[in-house]
Amino acid sequence: MSRSALSIVHLASEMAPLVKVGGLGDVVGALSVEQARRGHAVTVALPGYRSLSVPEGWTHESMSGCEVPWGMGRERARFELLRPPAGGNSVRGSLRVLLVGHGGERRFFDRPGIYDEPTTGAGYPDNAERFLFFTRAALEGLKALGEPIDVLHAHDQQAAWAPCFVRTHDAGAGVFDGTATIFTIHNLGYQGIYDPWVLGLAGFPRQLFHPASPFEFWGRVNYMKVGLAFADLLSTVSPRYALEIQRDGEYGFGLEGVLRRRGADLQGILNGIDDAFWDPARDPFLAQPYDREHLEGKRASHRALAEECDFAHDRPIVGMVSRLVDQKGFDLLEEAGAALLETCASFVVLGYGQPRYEEWLERLMFERPDRVHFMARQDERLAHLIEAGADIFLMPSRYEPCGLNQMYSLRYGTVPVVRATGGLVDTVEEFDIATREGTGFLFEPYEAEAMVGALKRALAIQKQPELWEALQKNGMGRDFSWRASADGYDRLYEEALERVRAGKVPTLETVQATLRV
Image (cartoon, rainbow, N blue to C red; front, side, top):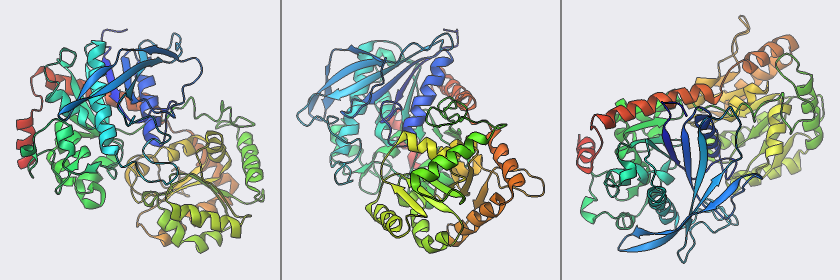
């Protein structure tokens, strides 16, 4: 490894290809691989879910378990190390995964779901304990490995206690001497808000539960707030979202005051995409590859998608691959259902979520099978086929921290129609007919009429082949690889390490003083 190589640990609840519910899994998987390629020694701590899917060629190595402090008692943790196949000469560092298992009676991760009970769609009632245990146990596993850590990078509320524990309970552990902590917000809408008794499980006395405390949030404990308060530096997944979440409650969800207090420590780093996996020129899920200069394969994917959905081949196809939740704009889609079907397009949706939206889409598909096709599942092959075969990709999000599908779409020559929010603004530019510049179509107000108007603008250009091809090629020429994004994290890590070297690390006292201002 090079002299500048770091020992980096990511704590996260998802990591592709092992486990993925949403974009978090893609981000952690791709960022860790890129960092290993750059020469860093990377460890990803991940819950040892029953449903984990380990690809062929990965190696397993058992570790000794240990007892984890747990309120007034202790809980048993089990550990295993996974390693992907050697990456060849292009990978100068190393990558491994520390799987954290639970040996207690309830087996926190030995269940069919990740966050939710699959049969009901409801979150597990003990999620507060599950992810608090994961974080505490992961740090015990890292201490057992005994290797000094330069950067500990925690992702979202499921790992948010890690920066706190490093500066409190585990402050004297040798592996964390000189460790800088980073906390990344992937989606502030999911904060992990639980009743105050979880504070005792985390090992903190009840007298620390008060309004100026990092642990109190309107009478409850907020995991996201804990991460925001204790990390050396904060990041989120696009520059626009970093500004939005400090502005007001619409985007800050009650934490905008905390974020403004730490505004100087917060950076927006746009997510990247795995441009080797998402590459129409080498995509194994497509019958015919294509690139920016040879779009014939895209027309073949359009035909294949139309056949799969029983659509007419001569209609434009609007695709969506998404969780079916309010955040993703499905209330707008439901409101605009009749207006959407009055356009010339057919619509294909892949994903699952709130029963209300699944039932609505199933009903639409039953009534108009020639125009609507819905698949309530995750399916990697179909996700790639939709990105390649659709003409337009629709993302009408109420808010969008970054978004990945609009970047996949641009790479595949599928024109995005998006709401002007968060990372969608940072990645999609309105197409200008006069200059032929721009990559898609945006709408600002969160209104069904505005969304339908943007879609109609796209469909009008789609009828003009010369303009449409120019628009497609504009998008395919953009570079959203992890190489640029990883540069941003390299700089963020160095800034955090400089603070640690200068002795400027958060303590319980300084954190409370910051929140009291």
